[in-house]
Each structure stands twice: as C-alpha cells, then as structure tokens.
Amino acid sequence: MLTRLLSGDTPRSGLLTLLLVAVLISLAFAPFLFPGTKSLETAARICIFIVLVASYDLLLGYSGIVSFAHTMFFGIGAYGTALALSTSGPSYGSLVWGTLAGALVAAVFALAIGLFSLRVKAIFFAMVTLAVASAFAVFVSQMSWLTGGEDGLNYKIPRELTPAFKLVQEKVFGVRINGKLLAYYLVFFASLMLFLVMLRIVNSPFGRTLKAVRDNAFRAEAIGYKVVWYRTTATVLSAVMAAFAGSLLAIWLRYTGPATTLSMEIMIDILLMVVIGGMGTLYGAVLGATLFILAQTYLQNLMGVAAEATSAVPLVSTLVAPERWLLWLGVLFVLSVYFFPSGIVGRLRAGRA
Amino acid sequence: MATEKPILETRDLTIRFGGHVAVDRVSCRFDRGTLTAIVGPNGAGKTTYFNLISGQLKASDGVVTLNGENITRLSVPERTDRGIGRAFQLTNLFPTLSVRENVRLVAQSKARKGFDLFSIAESHIELLERADHVLAEVRLIDQADQIVSALPHGDQRKLEVALLIALGPQVLMFDEPTAGMSVDEVPVILELIRKLKADMDRTILLVEHKMDVIRSLADRIVVLHNGELVADGDPAEVIALPVVQEAYLGKAPEAA
Image 1 (cartoon, chains in turn yellow, red):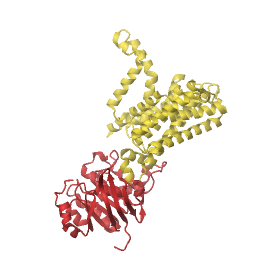
Image 2 (cartoon, helix red, strand yellow):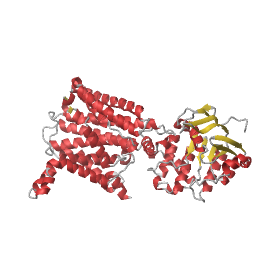
Image 3 (tube, chains in turn yellow, cyan):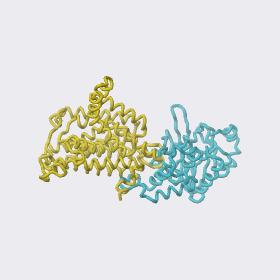
Image 4 (tube, chains in turn red, orange):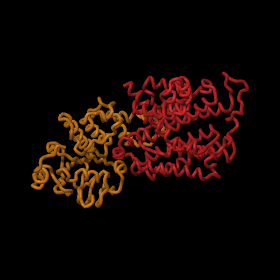
C-alpha cells in the first residue's frame, strides 16, 4: 500500500528514509511542534518549494532540459489565483477558477515554447526560456493596472483560511485552532498530493521514457519514441505543477508580487535546491528545499548567536557576523557540490551499495 | 520469390554533402525472408545508406519504400513504427540505465505504452518478462541489473543487438553486429540472426567485413564503392567478380 503510494520508488537507503520521515513528521505537525508565526511561515514555504523544486527536477533531472522559465510558470499560477481573488471576491469559487486558469495558461505557454524550441539544440531552449521569462517579468511589472506592477497585489482569501476565523475557542496543545492553521494544512496536503502525483509520473512508463530521452535522444527515436513530444509533455507537466505551487503561495501569503514569484533570485534558488538535493530523484527536492530554506531562514540567527559567543575573538566574530550569512550560504553550497556531486540523495543511495 | 513484391526498396537513393556524393543513385530491392550483406571498403557509403533507410539522414534525391509505401519523408520514429529497426555500428545505448531497463524500454515502445502517465512502469510484468526473454537469448541475463556504462564493450555490443531483437521489426538492419565481440560470443549472435531470418521470416540487411560471417549467413551480396552500387547477386558469384576483388577484397580488411 505504502509502496504503491510511493509508486514503487522507495528511498532505498536507511538514512534517507529516516531523513524523509523526519521532514514529513515535522511538516505534518509543524504548528504543534514549532509554534510561532515565523516557523509556520517557514514550514509553509518548505512545502511549497518542495513542489516547485520537484517540478523543476522533472525537467532538469529526468528530462535533461535546462529551463530558466520556471519562476514564470510559478508566477503565472500565483497571479492566476491572486487576480481571481481580487477581481471576483474572496470565495472558494474564485480560488478554484483562478488556480485552474493559472495552470491552463502555464500549460499553453509551455506548449508553445516547447513546440517552438525543443526541436533544436538544448542551449537554444535555455536561451528562449530566459528571454521569455525576462520579458514576462517586465510585462507584469508594466501592467500595473492589472497586476499592481512592482507593488504586487494584496487581496482577501476566504474567511475560513484567515486568522480571524476561530474553529475552536480554546487552544489545543497551546496552539490556536484558527483559519491560518487551516490554510497551513491546505498547503501541506495539497503539496503532499502534488508530490505524490509527480512521484507517480516519474515512475510511470512515461517517466522511464523521459530518462531514456535524457540519456540518448538519438537512440530513443530509433526505438520508436517521438522525442519532441516527450520533451514537450514534460515541459507542460512541469509548468502546470509549478503553477499549482504558485497558487498555493498566493493563498498562503495573501499577497502576490514580482519579488515573491518571478525574480531571477528564486530561479537560482530552485536550481541550487535541485542540485544540492540530487538531480533525477524527487526525494532530492524534499531534502534540497528543506535544507536550503532552513539555512536561508535560520543561518542569520545562528550566526548572530555565534558572533555573540565569539565576540572576544576579533577575527572570528567578524567572520560570523550575521550580515555575512550569504557568504556562508555560498560556502555551504560549494562544499555540498564538491562533496556530493550527485546530490545528497545520490550520495546516500550510493553509500548503501 | 522474384515475383513477390519487395518488402523494402530504394530507387535512385542519393545524398550529397556539399559537393561530395556519399550515396549515389542506389536502387535495390529486398525481399521477405532474405539476408543481404552490404559490403565495401571504408567510406563506401554503407552506413550512410543505412541512415537513409532508417531515417537518420534525409535523402537529397530518390525514394525509399516499405511495403509499397513511400517513407522517404518520414521521421525516424515513424519509420520504426512502420517496421524498420536498426542496430548501430558504434554502440548507442542508454548509459545510465540498467541492462534490463534498456531492453524494457524497447518492449514498452513496441507495446505503445510510452505515454502512459499514471501506472507504475514496474507493474507491467509482460514488458519485464519480454526484456528478460531477449536478454536470455543474447546471454546477458546475468548482467541484467548492471548499469550499462559499467558493462564491458563486448557485452554492450550484445545489448545493442538485443535492443533490435526486442523491437523485432519487419526489416532488421545490423551494422557490423559482431565487431568488438569476443570470439566465443560471435556464434551466439550469428545463430540469433539466422533464426530471425529463418523462423521469423524477417528481411535482414547486414553490413559486415568478415568474409566467413557473410558466407555463412548471406543469400545475396550488394557491393557499394564510392557511394555507387557496383555489384549485386549471389554471394559466390559476387565475391568472384574482378570489380569486387579490386574494390573490396584487394584492400586489407579494416580492423573495425
């Protein structure tokens, strides 16, 4: 049953299983295990980024396609939901149609880009996605009457998903059971479901064919696979999944703007998370996203503590000053790529053999 | 047999690369249940001729027909779909996947399950069984779980042949199937090719350098030289022709 839910793709490493179970339990009970606004924000971000990073791995790791337009699809999903909520009111109806419309637009865009540029060399596709994504970001920031421009959109979501809505008057285990908690569980279960769907896709006959196309497109054609259609379908699926992740972010933040969805910075973060976790395995997305976001959120605090503790030592305290957290994040990244070229999951699975 | 329609035919098939004519107006018919050896010195256009038939290259002029249908403008997978299969001279596999998975992918393509998104690949037992059956035939079953890139060269050559056998098309094109194989492996592959022709009534095209292989398998020899068809006929007669002696056997056989 569990194997079937995981589509037969078990972690195949004791330590990896342990880590994944730890992440799952932490996210499932985050509001109770780690009370507080900041930790709940972080947990929701991790859920959403696991979906986003996994959907990117569908392209990069499984199909061998390099795309820089992933944040564009993420943004399309977020703006779809955001626009629906701000134009047709905070109802579940507008939430659903906005999300579906975002996914549909993302699919159409991906289909067009795929058919137009996946026939030719991989580098050409990468360049086209970069150009289209940059153009889209400019377009969104210029269309301020619709998208709010650089300021983005603030909107209301259905009342049951906001802190104002109280499900139970008393606290349970010291935690308020309110709409924010419901919103978190919406994000959590939606992410879990999307992840399991992707896990099924990569372990389906289609997913296996993608790996063949990635390995040797020439031979894949010679045994009868129409490579362009497989690549295009992978691009469309990946775009739709990214759009759903975007919609979840839009619901969670009640705000959508270029900085939270479309920026090149997020694109690079996604790339790093895929590489750190391990390309070509969706479990890599789980570990990559979790570690990266934890580091992004808490490294600064951790360094603050370290700087305090070493304040007597002149050079060290300067080095670990909180404002240098980006430097250390960079060091961590270089080290992880150096020691785990096949990512954390690749390393763990190889260690077992 | 001569009155029957040919399975595969090329008419005035030509390809030019700039000023160089690599294959020059080659017209040839291939009948059901026959094995034709295509010989010629290096650079004669044998592999290019294969590429034109299986679609990796598009003809500048001329026509390729399969069962009477003009397939000259079709893509590689479309031709594969209609029954043309190809094993490559330079090993051309899926290197990061297992041996079994390589063959399973062929069986999956043949069963048209490539776009099945929602079932688990491993649950299609019949595809795994088909893969293991072919691997047993080429004697690779003990290596089924190995990753292809870690496989010795000779085994990779066997897998190359296994992929074509798993595809089991109407027309099978082998490009030096036994090159790089150890001496005791060669008869296994030759026996498989013989079986494909005799028991399964397939049409086989074989590029080969080893004369003993040709003698033991071929019904007919076609000689290419500088892209042109210079001789075509019964093996014993063709080998005796002066033009063949000069163009092909006069030169030292290549190591490849």
